[in-house]
Image 1 (cartoon, rainbow over the protein chains, first blue to last red):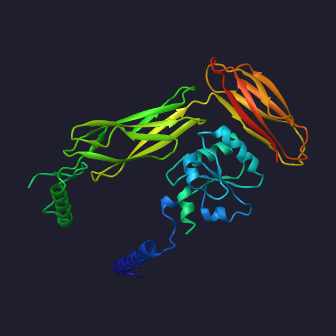
Image 2 (cartoon, rainbow over the protein chains, first blue to last red; image 1 turned 60 degrees about the vertical axis):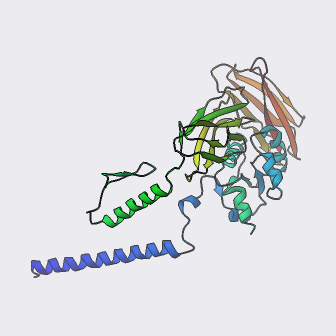
Image 3 (cartoon, one colour; image 1 turned 45 degrees about the vertical axis):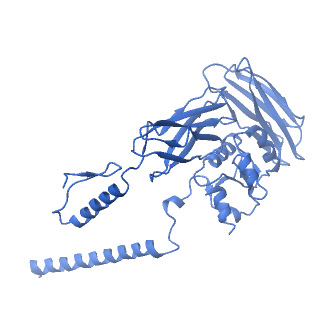
Length: 151
Length: 239
């Protein structure tokens, strides 16, 4: 039968072991966070609802129909090859051409200038909810992400 | 030694010289003192409000918000950039340089176009006073007079030519009558049905055939507003 001091000692050793294991795990996690170049994306890189990354859009089985939600002037300065302009400045005028190009099964990916703009989300929302079109996505990072992906 | 030291952003540092963590506190105090001495005259814009909510009427073509500020520093501040998150919104300041004590405003104007519902625009104001850019938020709720769902009706090629419908629901308190629907072609049978006068209408659609592609554009005409009745669009396709 163990004496109470032995029990206390054993409990103390176990506590130290547990502490050592937890400390080692914390150190490993911290090292992974700092040094691992492939660590999970930070919160700012997380996808918002309805967003798709460029690499996933590019890997789509059906060719993507790119929708540029920026103003005409920015579209004219440069856009994704084959993209169609559709913004809320001239929604009624621009939508018919998009519908002409769209085919069932062809995903639509909407983009605007950058991560911070909301136009792509608003256009995508209208295509989904008002028009009832399926397979509508927003390009994460917008035009800036597309440009970065070309290098 | 003063009882406490306030940084430029209002954080207060309590005296901590005798505390075991005094090194950290001392470092913070020194940093604040250095900042205080090396940049004694930072200009600073104090904003009356950084967020504005707008409720334009159904006929408005644009909505504007003014964000007023005052230079509360003791040096002039130059507004070097005013940028909107959306090309739909023009944002500008009255002028570039504001003297100490001087007030001004940044104005943002949203082009309503075919927009509806809640529009959120961020306006970033950059100054040369070393402060971080300020983000102003303009929230514009554009009234939806009619809710048309869906605005695009389509049949896959070869599908059964069953009837489908577009529902037109009045969203405002005052009634709106749908007085007619015009079709750009005859590939579909188009019939307007009054479900509840002034509140709910239905446009029933039946394709003549789904054997080949077809596209028509519908114009849904209303009686509102009286002086310039509005027309809404919908699209019918066989794809």
